Image 1 (cartoon, rainbow, N blue to C red):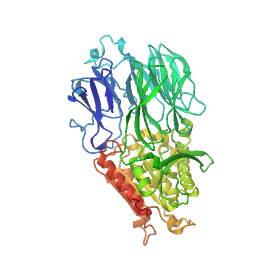
Image 2 (cartoon, rainbow, N blue to C red; image 1 turned 60 degrees about the horizontal axis):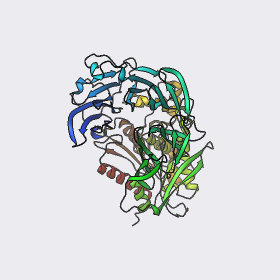
Image 3 (cartoon, rainbow, N blue to C red; image 1 turned 120 degrees about the vertical axis):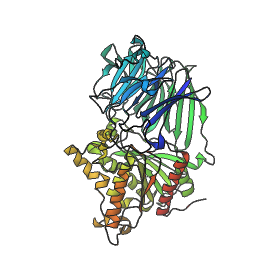
Image 4 (spheres, rainbow, N blue to C red; image 1 turned 90 degrees about the vertical axis):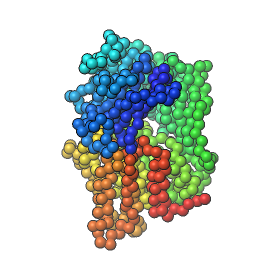
Length: 601
């Protein structure tokens, strides 16, 4: 995480050891890159929110464990994270002197995210209890503190936060404020999101500024250049940028952009320029500078990433729609060399996620370019239900009692790629991470004969016990919890760990060799993954190897089932470039070798 003070003098940044979710915040003086002695430990699920005077910042942390020796230990911790707290840190002081601003012992599962409004008047608290897109919203008027934040030192009194929204009924994110009038991005009665406005002095005065669109999802809004809004819609998994009026939401200008992903928008009301970060399957990365000074947005390239040896004109990306088991049309991106023959001969990599309302939009991957250029792969991303591509309704259609829809959608994607002539079952590799690792594991349990290889990263494999470790309890909003009888019945039906079966005992017809065993499978995890703890992967590996291999004499399971366990790595973030390269080389070499794919010079 990073946070820059408003005057640009200081950069606060968080680093994690060995890829853990635990973060240590440090501070650097920007002009000479001098590192200050400040060091803040036991930070997790936080934001760095500077006050406008540049004297310090808000952040969130958990209490230090009872066995803390003064610094986060080097090993993994699997205990449940409880009692999140919000602090203010004054530059140049010890963490022990930080001001506790908010905690709520009566609700130990709450997670707090602080933010300071652009005018510096308010500190906001977004309060969540799970990964569901709902939150409470509190605010504190910093200008009303009689002696400022420094006057709270040593008082042991929390800041006087006002609870603007005190129910977990919808998602609320403040976009801008004009005094006491807050403009808020919300999904309240709007599954594709809208902009509303409320005067905090009259908390019942909610009005809509930009109503929910009939089809597109309003993903982001940023107040810029005084009285304007830069809004970012997602329409059929393609981004649409618009300039609108902050006062009334009316459209001022459309801003043309290629098919790809808007990964970030940075702008302020006091500036006449905005920066937009963009990438796509065939665009490594561009930062656009959008000049608003003339009234008409003018886009120019500010920075662009180039990859030596990569020529985007050799490839093409297209979007297709295919029917799932229940007839729902599912979008999927297909990327390949140009003008390939649809004769079923190509190896294919199918990627999916399908959870927590996260949208899988086009992103550049050097590894996938190598697969396409040097191994002849077709690479695909299926936008299955459970994601956020069409808003909350799409998300809910793939969660809780509807989770099987995710697996049906992903299996249907594989069937489409085969029937359309892109690939064949023996050359179809599926891949996913975290919730996507669960997706891959569930699909090879349910349809082992459809796939030629499976790569499951850091997957949630034990659906009956995930809530007992670290932050797993926050996922019950998407999965359910085995401690509830009805939800147990959902989970036991697809939990990868509990559904490993011998395919040869099912009497499956068709291609006997392929259908009588699981595809070659690589399960990937890391010793410092404290998000989805390694025991998920290790138990699933042991179960697969026992049920399919060691417990059977002359087992038909001859395809390899292996694990790759990285050291000094976590859930995926915080890895060195070399570790990223090593893992990509291992997993894709495994896929190519087991599917009989040869290198193309």
